[in-house]
Length: 262
Image (cartoon, rainbow, N blue to C red; front, top):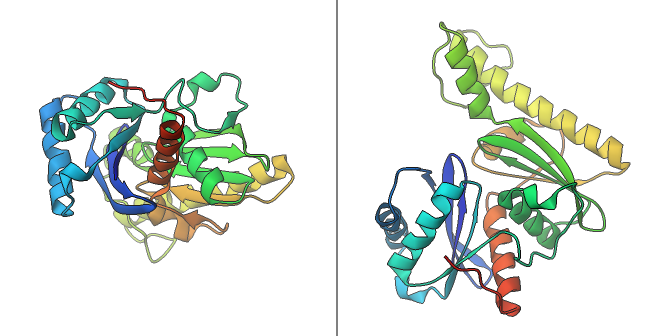
């Protein structure tokens, strides 16, 4: 059994994987000021809520786009479970061929998503991850990572809109029954949801035109479940994609005897 963690700018995804089964997938807020003890308490609480035996973990694997939090969470895992953490980064075996101009700049979350994509879905692939930023990764038919897009995330766009317009209220993101809103909050909800869905549809179409072929499209991330039902393109929603990718990477590096520790 392994502990899998992905540290994002807004949320940290924490999961437990036994063989090929994901036992849980939970999110907590990313806290730049939290100590290793505070993170250990959060992880311990999640494990206990799901009735998991803390003595059953053989290892942990982590990806992170927040360097200041990476070491803190790794030390929390060590303090709580007395296991080392494999951290996705340079030197880690992924089985992925990255054809971008500077592969070292590619975020570890995008690498993990792509690893999961090529192992669980048919290429060519477009992988959409909706978080603080919405990212679109493109993998060709030979499982080469070609590049992609980085777009302001839905909540990032909404926060910017509210902060820049004095009369617009804070709202929660939710699906509306109509495209044409009848009051301010409904107009904002419909606008952000449908604009995002239309933008995703358009980007998929343009990527496929550039590649000259149809792609398998997979979406993940905290907000993807809200938006993908509004899209006209065929999109597979997989909330466990990151955890699946971390599982594959952990196994590749265990088999090859490589461990990067904190």
